[in-house]
Image (cartoon, rainbow, N blue to C red; front, top):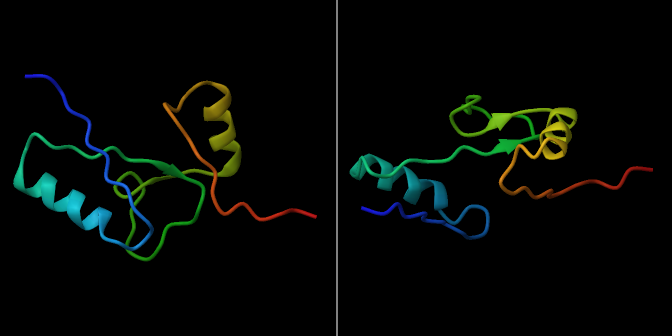
Length: 80
């Protein structure tokens, strides 16, 4: 059987995580990838479960080393 990559896409809060968790729960053939983020964990989030929580320096180092298949920066505040 060939592998299939499934991408769930949508705005924040529409239920992507809920759908993904349900797919994994119902079918052992599904697995979640875990992204890195530079934001702080929210209440109840655990490093390595929802995200890998890293600082901006570690994020930039991974970019420089080619450590990501893809990456995006969001919500960057303008620095003065």
